[in-house]
Image (cartoon, rainbow over all chains, first blue to last red):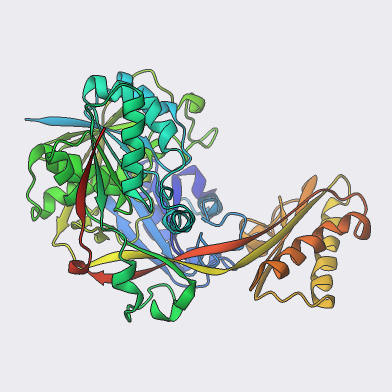
Length: 103
Length: 446
C-alpha cells in the first residue's frame, strides 16, 4: 500500500463552479496503476462533502496523465463562493492522499 | 525556419513586476505579453468606469509600462496585453501619456475595442450556462457583458505597426496567438496550426505557473529560488514547433513535469479546448526535455472554430459577511467547536437572514470539509470562520459581529477577531452568435 503522492503529481484548476484536477505519473510505468485504481468513482467518493456533481475522467496516455473534471464542486464558483479557498486550488493535495495498492 | 520568442510578463493582474523586466532585458524576446484580466475583473472595472469615464483599466498598467517601456522601445519588443479591462481606449491613452513622459513619443499604441457586447446581449434571451435563466432575467443586477475575442484584431493591430496592443476581454491564449499570426501569416482556418499555437498560449498565459510556481512540494517537487522565479519564454517556429524556456540564471525550472501540469490547468475535455479562433485538441500533445530548462511541446491540433463566442456576464449576486477568531493551546479544538455552535445559535436567535452559511475551523476542516478532514490529528491552534450569504450589506455585517462578540461572550481565550462584509459581483457565461461582436482596432499615437 502506498499513497498516490508517491507516484504522481497533481494540479487543480477552476472554471466557474467546475474544478479540474490532473493526476500525472512521475514515471510512465505507473500510468497503468493510475488507470486501474484512480477511477472517477473513487475520486467522487474521496471528495464526499466537496463535490456535489459528477466526476468525469479523461485519459492522456502521451503524458501519462489523467484529468478529472468535477462539476458543482466550488460552492458556486470563485466569484461567489463562501469558501476560504474559493478557487479550490488546494484540492489536488487532498487527492494525492488517495491510497494505491502496489502490484 | 523563422522563429519568434514570446515572453509572458504576468499571469494575473497583481503579479510580480520585475520578471517582465528581466525578460525584456535578458530574454532575447520580440514580444512581451501581459495577461492581467481575471474572470470577474471586467465587471468590477465596468463599475469603476461608470463612476469615472477615464478609468476602468488595470490599476497596475502604469507601473508595468514604466518598468518595461524603455527596454521594449530600445529593443523593438512589442507588447500585447489585456490590461484595457473595461476601457481599452483610456488604457491606450494612458500608455501613450506614459510613453511621452519617458521620451518615447514614436511608439504606436493600438486599442482593440468591441468586446463590450452589453447592448447586443441585454435584451436577448441568451441562456446562462451556469444556472437556469436568461440575461434578461438578471434585470438591473446586470453590470457587464464582454465577449472573449480572438487573436485576429490583435494581429491586425500588429500588422498595422502597433508597438503596444491593449485589449479588454480576449481569450488568454489569443494574446499569444496574435504575435504568431502576425509574424508568420498563419491562415485563420489552418486549424492544426491554430491548435498548436493555442497550446503555446495556454502554457504561457499563467506566467510563473510553468516555470515552477504553483508546483513546489518539498521532498517531492523541489524548486530552486522561487523568490526570483523567472517567467517563461515560448520559442515558436512558423511550423508551430514550440520550446518553452526561461532566462538563464533566473529562479525556478522548466521541466516536463511543470509543462504537463500546466497543459491540463483549467482544461476540461482535452480533445475540445474551445477558443474563439479554434477548437484546440491537447490529447496528442507530447512533452520532451531537450536541455536544462528547455522543453519541446509538440502535437497540438485543432478543428474548426464554433459559431458562437463565450461572453462573460458580470452581475450583482449577493452580499457576503464573514468573521474569524483564533483559539490555541490545550483544548483549542473543543473551544473552536463550541465557538461555532454559539455563533450558529446566535444567528438563529437574532434572526440574521442568510441564504447560505459556512461554519468551519481553519487548520482543521476549512479547505476540504469535515468528511475529507476527519482523519487528521488535533492541531495546536484553530481559527473559527463563519461566512454567510445575504441579500444586503446590513445583514452581512451581522454575521461578522456575531463572531467578534465571542471575545467577551464566547469560549475562553479567543483572540485575533476579524470581520468583513462585502458585495459580490459574480460572473456567469452565455454564448453569443459570433457575428454580433464587432471588434475594431483604434490607433493612439504617443
